Amino acid sequence: MAQRVRKAVLPVAGLGTRFLPATKVIPKEMIPVIDKPVVQYAIEEARAAGIEEFIFVSAMGKEAIAYQFQPQAQLEHLLSEKGKTAELKLIRDINLPAGKLHTVIQGDPLGLGHAVWCAKEIVGNEPFAVMLPDDMVLSDVPCLKQLIDAHAKVGGHVVAVEDVPRDQTNRYGVLDVTSEEGRLAKAKGLIEKPAPEKAPSTLAIIGRYILDPIVFEELDKQTRGAGNEIQLTDALSRTIGRVPFHGYRFEGKRYDCGTRVGFVEANVAFGLAHPEMGPRLRPLLEKLLKN
Ligand code: UTP
Image (cartoon, rainbow, N blue to C red; front, side, top):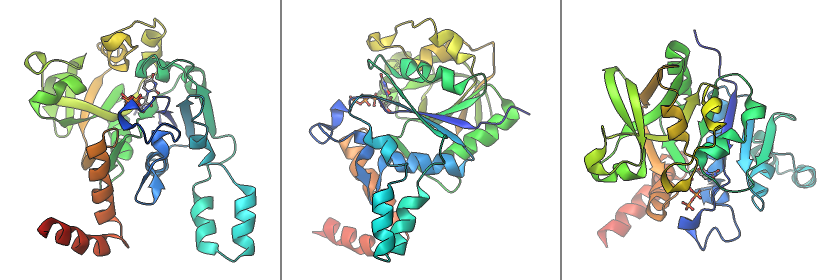
């Protein structure tokens, strides 16, 4: 039985250039999908998966992300005085316990591998989750919980994967698979952003990972990869053979909120899945499509 996963690292230091001008002032993670900022979905998923400690790898100007999960005494007092109990509950429920929310600043956006490395001291020597809030997953069982359950059985690194169209492999880390059993794909290698003709499979990593701390030994070397960035996938691939490496075909549907179309798609999908809004939204969308 593998060691329990208690900590999640959320790299949010990226510049969000694909979402300008929306992200000129507002961090892209704070843009709402339906009625909650994108990052809140990731935190709620992590809590539902049993994560107890949260580490934002952030950047100057993106302080609002951590404030979303801290008590706002003045606002809480005001809502309480006005008897707005439902609203008070909404903002209180998302407060993380004192001492369980950490922010480290990634001075320069040197890549996802570098962002994860910045959390090394707070993670310590135990398995941990990495969540990229841009990837939102609609599923019956929270995606991160699915990974944690799989990790409890196989240990090592377990990353969420899905089949992508072959002409899109150059946007992802892609697995070189040796064998598959149920939802688990055992991998012997991993390539970052391979050209479609060079991709060893179409099984691509999405933004949910459970990692063995051995990855920090490789990240310590600060080796640059594709785009001259310190790539997480490169560091992971160099640890294969030392710890097990599995892709997990999660149950659910992923939406890539880092792109404009993906963001609109996520709003529609999460809107339709919303218990109050869904039934009101569906006829509106059907009417729009008819015209
Ligand atoms: P992206 O590739 O989406 O980059 O990063 P980005 O900068 O956020 O967005 P664009 O491409 O400019 O529009 C994937 C994830 O890794 C984090 C981002 O915040 C995002 O969650 N990241 C990336 C960092 O934290 N630091 C980095 O140096 C790079």
